[in-house]
Every structure is written in C-alpha cells, then in structure tokens.
Length: 137
Image 1 (cartoon, helix red, strand yellow):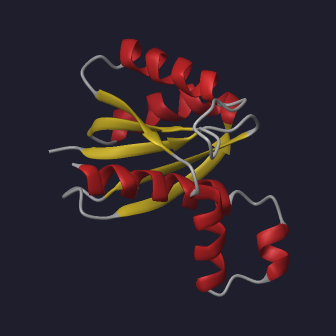
Image 2 (cartoon, one colour):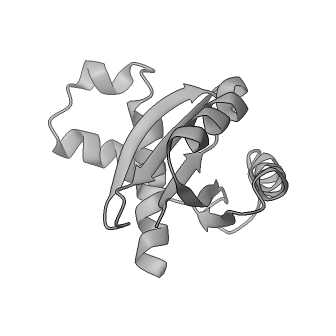
C-alpha cells in the first residue's frame, strides 16, 4: 500500500506534498527548485512506496488555460512514461494559493513570513491539491 504524492509545479519552485501510508492525511513535504524535480522524485521513489502522483492542473477562474497549464500537462505525460507503474492524474488547482495563504494566516504565520519567498506557500498548496484528490477518491 503506497502513498500518494502531489506536485504544485511552478516556474522556479515546486511544492511537494505526500499522504500518510494509509492515505488519510495530506501533508506538506518540501519545496524544491523546479529544475531539481526529476532528481527529487527519483530519490524519493527509491526510499518510499508511492502508488500515485497528483499534478496540480492550473486553470484561470473562467476555465481557460494559464501560463502553467501546458507545463503541467507536459509534466503529467512525462511522469506517466517515466513511472508507468504509478497512476498519474491532474487535479484542478484553482484557489489553492489563496487557500494556502488563508491556512498560513489561520496557523498564525507572521505577515513577514508570508511575504518571504520561503516556499511554505508552495508545499501547502501541494497539500491542498492532494487533499482535493483524496476527497474525490
């Protein structure tokens, strides 16, 4: 029984989240440089049993593509080929950044911490994408 890993792809940074072994909770894992994603996944999959990969599917509020829609689809296709034994799905990520910011505020993050490009927002967004997927299955 493997975990589910979620990816919130960005141009510079990518948020990663993962479920617990029972696939009950979605937990922020890490924020990495996007150029390091392939190596991170390869290393992570050697250490952990992951049965599915969820890629955030960016769309604008009216449902049209954003600048990150094509890269997300390309990533999904690439992962499907590279890790054919794993299920790879796209999950709508509209509102995730806003929800992640609201979560940080609710958790008591200081305004300074939220403004810094620390990557917390990215991994929390990945966790929200992952929770969306868990709620659908």
